[in-house]
Length: 444
Image (cartoon, rainbow, N blue to C red):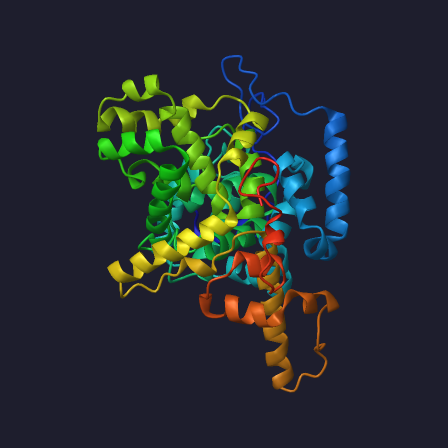
């Protein structure tokens, strides 16, 4: 248990580094991600060739240095590089940029520090503390209960309960926040968690889990159109996606993929949004039930669920082949938008009192970026209305090309966002989809 005094001390410590040497004894051998190697394992010890890493680092540094301009004029460049994989050395910078966390930090300066210094409800503190040592116990950051990893995780999750008191803490946020902390400092991890929960996956971590319920229905539709044989098998044995995919979606596959593959999936997720989660789920179902002989080995509901819940065994230490398979799942942003609209009509009929609306959720990095710009401009307008004339009339001339009318109508009050209008700055344009229907060339 972390006492109030220890909680205060935690906020003054950095959240990077290792706990491997915090106790007496030799430091355990770890792979390149910080996981302790056991029984002579060499998994995760070999990375990409250094020259390839340097090339990709150079490309991403160029993207970062021209972020606003590239967002508006060269969106395919970011998509292609996310598909190839963000270098490990730059994820701490790129993930917050992609999801809009960097803008959030600028707009709400010192808010995280304020939340971190405030006491949280003891009921949430107790639940969070019980979960701390369950998150990646074989990673060097989380070895010690008093180490910086578990303390940093406590800070991030506690701050979230302060930021979103109506939601509080959901256990599935634990592994998500832990992976973020493995790649960036606590403040950046906190704002990435906020963006994931608010913009990318709204309703996933709310008390009613409405976002998960909705996307389970969406997954049924995707499975039916992309792997009908597996879908028929699931339907025949009464296996619903909620029975096996809830943990996949809520934890963003943190417990079901090799770590390097997981990071590559998250690169795509921050770039494209929930569509990637559905595509990954399809690939995992294919790995288990894609072949006729596999389906024969699952003659009933229990056997089918057992295989699906143990899907980690079907994914070896791979990343490029798996990512190629994910990108080959035929699911375009336009198709997803259309089906979301159809599914939402059913949702409103079945749940007339529900306020959940998935149509305004973030479908990619440009929308997260523009949402941040819109919030920034709205805040400036309020300041000017109060008589603060020092606030500029326009933060950036580039914002003008984002079609403020579109942003106001589509993003205001959770209204749906039309993918074609978005990609063309407010003009319906088929060319904005780059002729892609979710194929391997570009997941856009």
